[in-house]
Length: 459
Image (tube, rainbow, N blue to C red; front, side, top):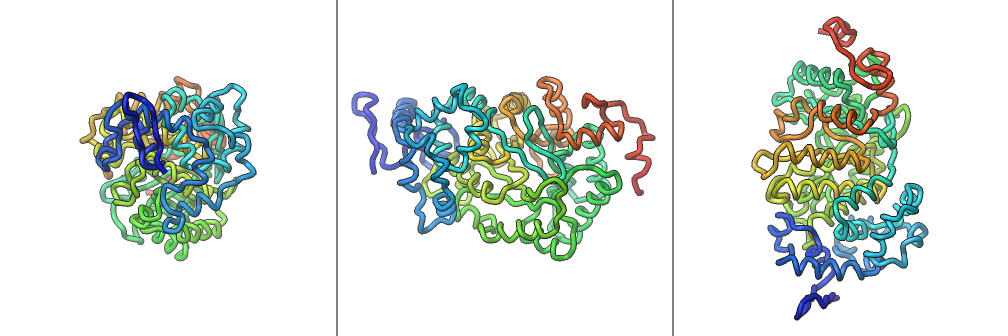
């Protein structure tokens, strides 16, 4: 079905809904790489005007990727909660934007609506929103999850402690982990990206983190970010696995490039649940996503990269994760060219995920060949913290020495706490006070070499 606009002398004709969405997107290098981006500012505005006038119901009647050939499309269609949709069912996309920004549209209304929204709906409305709109609407969305502590409460910000090492050296990883704990980081998860694929090495990583947790009674969860099949095997062999990790995307073919299917993710979740390791809740999954992943796999089906990313959140939502992390600038400048594009993408991803009911964090990051720097990351993390982000990354010096990219540091989280009065997960904050690492207000205390964490650690 063609969509027409009467902007300009000749007007514009868009071949189908995919083209409307792609041409309405803010400019980004990935869409131009795919040949999908608007050819001019006028064409982009024409597409946005068409999009603003489209009824939201359009997205229930016209699939971007055929139902018959894509299991993510089938998941989106089959899981759509028609009973939750009526509050907005009569809106156009433009009217939906206006409703989201009303003072009377509160957190309870958005939580009730989430099952009635599809990723294509939230991607569409995000394309009509300014950055401040994305921040304001996302701030009203509350998604709270639990495993050994509570993530996503209003006025709180958690940190994923990422103690990677280029040779998976246990002492190096332990040193970075302690460094992070002394800076009050680690309440989201202590998550290690292993450099190698040795299951024996990964067993040692899982065991080391669990020994640390048990010895000092830390209300935290750990994760080793290897392929989901390796984690299932590790669970079968008795490894102390807390969260099961997997990178996911928004199309069946893109997920196949990661070596996963929805059935495999269900198997992994059941394996993790069978261990019963959560003390406060059963959110056992940790997902990572990123704009451009479908395109980089040749699996985008002519759909723009931001809409593909929003579809990944339907996959995440299905498995009730503790954490979902958009690794926003990691794929590189071919997909998000510079700081401006990275900032916009981070705000879009956070908004879309939260509106769909997904617990969202962000790896505020860039690769060294992108036209971006740490000032851009300061801007994005400050905007996201104001938007109610669940967690950011904590990496020594913000420089990951194994993955070779730039992210955020333990100190960056301290800046956001000081600026905005943000607290850690309450159970973790109480542990920091018990250990003398922080005071009752959550401010860090001086640590000497006689501190219990150092004194009682095994050699």
